[in-house]
Amino acid sequence: MKSKGAFLGFFLTLLAGAGCRAAQLFLGLPDESAFGLLAPGALLLGGFLTLLPARREKTVMRLPLHGRVQAGAYLVLGLGVMGLSVVCTGLTRLGQYQTWNALAMLLAILAGLVFFMQGCLFAADGQNFAAQHPKVSLLPVFWCLWNLAVQVRVCVEAFSVQSLLVGVLFLYLSFSFLAFAQMAAGSRAVTRGRLAGWSLAAIASAAAVCVEAVFEGPQALVSGMQPPGSLLAGALCAVFLCVSLSSVRPATKEERVGEREEEEEPSVRPVVMMDPPAMSGPRLHAGRRPVVASREDLHVLTPSEIDLRTERVLVRYLQQAWDAKCYFYRKTRPKVKNP
Image: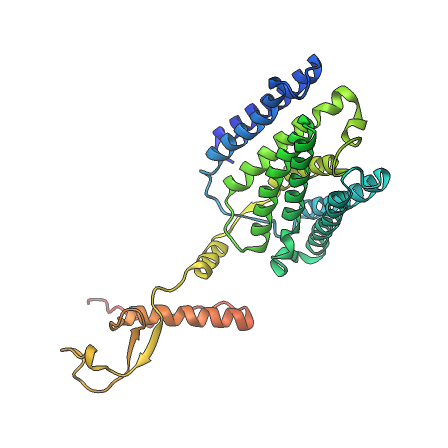
């Protein structure tokens, strides 16, 4: 990514969020103090400051054509999310919020299956699970949003800076996975700035969340966390985003043109009809000949407009039927050289 402001915002967010959290734990300040809110506030403010300059990057991104690294990242993420959720939930027996944690575990299993299927098909022969099932590929987004809802409820009942930081992490992860799902499914043009902006904010949040493990040991990543295993799963998602940002590629010219044609809605719908009285004019007195006009605007189309719409209809029909490429050749008169 060429935007230096995005990387500057990322590093400032990382230093501010992780630094404030480390200072709070080092000084032993309570979570209810004003200093405890500095880390979540820095992550929220810094994340959007990272996203604003990053959105200047307008390059449309795509998954790699044959990426073993990307396929492996999907497989590891899918197995990791499912395994961490099931194992941690089994060790804690759903914890304090049994209904909320049970639903979080179910969504984690479904999201892990989506990641795993995407990785398997992508590693096999380059197939795209998200393109075949675009709605199912949104399950990881719902999993992140549910984890965010659980963290909000925990903070309402018993305020915790760590739960608030995990909530900020899953907020950024939901936007990141939404961008990845839309990019993989091809349902919307996802730019490099949007993809990198949300992903960098999520990575900085994951680093701030893991600071507690440095002071209190690795058990702090598992004990007392609701839903069980959500913190480790969020950190694994941040690692996945790091790998994916280095694996995605810019879209080719053919992909951009095809996407633009699919998104464009024709301003007029051509229809063949006979000359109505309202269209009679000096050029239409030759007889009752067919006229190509528009339903919205009753005016005679020029031959170039008719050729353009005919070619577009033929190309779309052939692509749907045989996935073929069409080439149109126009006959031109040979130029006669002057003797």
